[in-house]
Length: 169
Ligand SMILES: Cc1cc2nc3c(=O)[nH]c(=O)nc-3n(C[C@H](O)[C@H](O)[C@H](O)COP(=O)(O)O)c2cc1C
Image 1: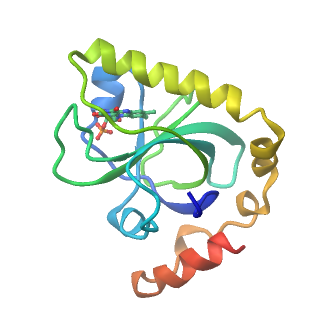
Image 2: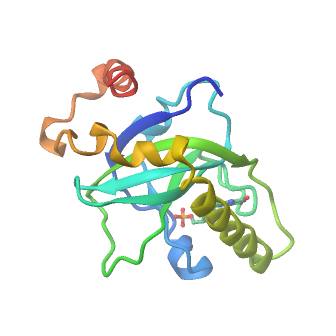
């Protein structure tokens, strides 16, 4: 995928809340403006990379992009699971991510257990892959230290431009 690594950031919005409650794997959802800006060659599926909130620590992450076939969502989403235990949820905060690699396509599963097992396998795969030097270097990228605050976020009409700037930062 020529668009990887892909940098983006946006406010954390509420999803259906199933990640925490049903799966035990909380995910942070991005707004439509971020989802709609994805380059055409970033297909739906599961990705891994780095994530940070409000310019704090940078953590490993896994992300699901698509329609969650197990739940048959009608709206495309980008859901990030930050591989860290947080004391509180972070709705409304700015989440910055860089996607560096692709794991697999989204699938439907016969049971919730099978979906949870698949996601936990993704997490383990991401943890190992992100320790490789070619991926580890993005943890230190200045994208994570030079982020704009929400108040300086560009209006949506210029978001395509800002996206381009982010990737060429
Ligand atoms: C690493 C990862 C892999 C996922 N893989 C799938 C998948 O293969 N199929 C699927 O239907 N949903 C998949 N999901 C999405 C979950 O179903 C979704 O996060 C959950 O429904 C919570 O959504 P919500 O935040 O909107 O409540 C995945 C999520 C993550 C974080």
